[in-house]
Length: 132
View (cartoon, rainbow, N blue to C red):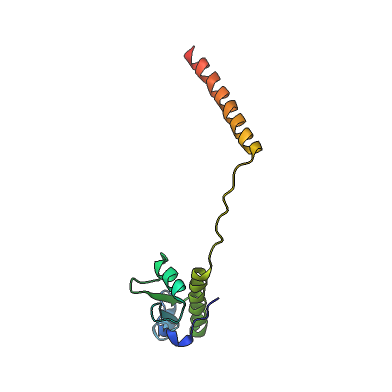
């Protein structure tokens, strides 16, 4: 798990969207988080994986933009945005184990062929019945 340095993250408070009554026009409780992949201290391999990842939150300039407005508190939204950023980086860090090629067993091959023969016989009886 790669830690992201706090100085590489730019967080700004913005007004949240949606219903909220009179309070929504006064309080900037939502958070915009910006993280520049190119300027970060992440290893080059992870940077490349992030840049090639088909995520709508990653711009063509290589900046991850996350808007957090799930909570009414700015601190909770800030923590939510940081957690979502860490999730994106962790997903890029994780590598899948290479697939080991396997072959079907003799029994499964035999059962498959037997089932095909059985279905063919059922269909052959339909053909004879329809021809008459």
